[in-house]
Length: 359
Image (cartoon, rainbow, N blue to C red):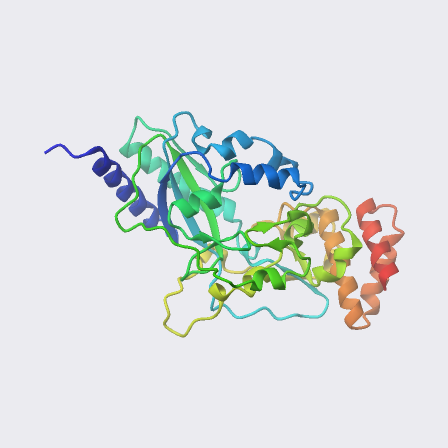
């Protein structure tokens, strides 16, 4: 008996999903490559200027609106999620004169770790289907990853705009494979409905008021300010940044779906690649970094997007907040020297001047 087209597409999906699971991805699903349902929302978001200085988000929006245009003849997507932290991980400790790093960037570089396994998946898929095209992506492709993840049953998009799974929470990294192969969702793949309900904890906790339901004004987000912004940070945000020097986890830390669960509960485990190499940096150390020091500190991590002047700017702001809490003469003296050091980047000198003025 000849199999129906849907049965064949489901068999193909079952095999690829199994291969992805063998590669230790925490969640795997498939979806079609149909146009985005949120293209108008993206356009309005960009028109409002909420992207800040991330001009790259204004390019290739024809593909963001139509994921099928990423590769010629794209028909389907296989979407994966890596778990980089567990909801039962111990909470951060706030150490004096140290700057915190967001959890996703504490281990090895997820771009390399995920792409390595996704390329293995593509190689195996090409062997099984030699007439088809498979392209892996992690962050770099202009596709609506979160929408595709929602379609593929990875989770739902929370009010903080991150993908949430009811068991694993939101400490998830997304990637995938675009393909010309027709895939149908496996029988066990079901959509996950929105579990946010009336909760507004992420909105209430954001210290810069960057979040409204299902929307983030990136230009106010601490992650944007410390990772993406290549210019001085407005002093109005300095105190809210607290001790974050690369990214921010506040909206995730307060989310009920990331709250600790009883021993033995099924919450998944972070992939070993993301075991923390560090969770913070000594602020005075960062303020004394050379280019070689930065390169050495960032060698295996997802921190390379922040330049040396950006890291010094961030550390100065966090140091100013530390100085408000306690007297640390060495830290203050270093900020004073940076303010007048002509060898430093103008952004670093400006941050030092702004912090000293506030003190």
